[in-house]
Length: 491
Image 1 (tube, one colour):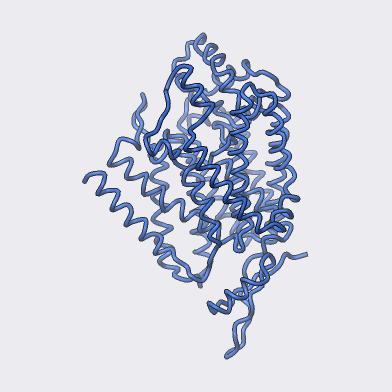
Image 2: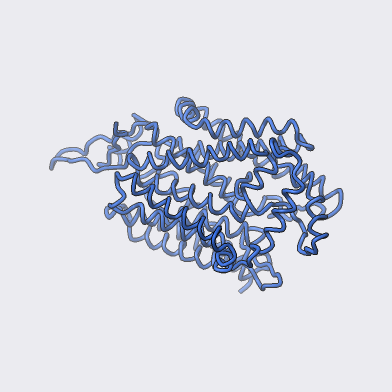
């Protein structure tokens, strides 16, 4: 079977998945297509690469191309950001209230903007900061949707239903979805290397696992059987792709995140934040103990060598090449300014695999190199503050908080061996989504879990009340015959 026929069959499969997952009773705003398209791009390849438009691969011209970026990609991102800002402008009160509750995130973005001033390439750093703001804007579009929980479920479905089957086509029927090295073939799917592919799979698959858990928990969900079939099929496909990518960190994070979603969804954790704390603390202590007491054995168990597949040498060389321990090189600027220093140190140590080195393979170290200790501190406030808010939000909306907690914990682990706090990465997007949605729950912007109101026989269904949209839910309830009501945050 040729690639064109495989692509046609893939399109039919994708259409079938969307058909099985349909739910006319739960509508979301059309603005949700903006973060969906954003995630399609962030989770795969730039549009210019899909179209075969690539710049020089080496020399000074390659550096200039890296700094300037693709004009086509820049135009697409700017158009999406502008459209999202228009959507948010119509939700002004929600957005203002939400931003006031996410001060650590805003401080981090402000500091990133300030660091552009001391970057060796300020124009390039500023362009990258704009894209970073795009991540934040898209998250705000999702969280301020009139039906944020439903919007999240639709987002993961739309992204997974397209990127997972398309990856199969690229792997099986083209030469674009597989890469080879000394250890053998690795799946890259819709991305360009196994690590970015594994990252996309782990983030989206956790969202699909959460979707599946929500449908399993709601026995009265519309088209429940068909939706279970769709989500189970795509989730199994994602797990198989994760295994084929041979990205040990991503596979571990997916297992950990799925465990947290299903474990915290049990009744024993409901309204018991102390038990959730104990579970997360236990996971953290096991991770620290495994890394400190048996680092080599832990790395081997995850499919890596004792030096974490050469990462320890990269870490040492990058730290030795750092410009300023306090404030860093500048936002997303270290590798453009100092990659040659790192390469020289690695070559002196006999390290050979140094082609296209542009990552510290550690998220915390990457922040230190770009933003210094100030950046590491601000990032820590986001992680710790987000975790505490996710625990607090558990008492109000457990169904969404379990997803936020899974993303925060797995993102913290993922960045030990991969740089996942960088712009336009699914891990950074998921962390912002988890932190901001948890804040929205704690301030009552996202209502408590849906509950079925009592109705008398022969009477009309009770009106639907949603704290963040007093008009539309009631209209939808009467139009669809829904008897679902949202309960406001408990005091």
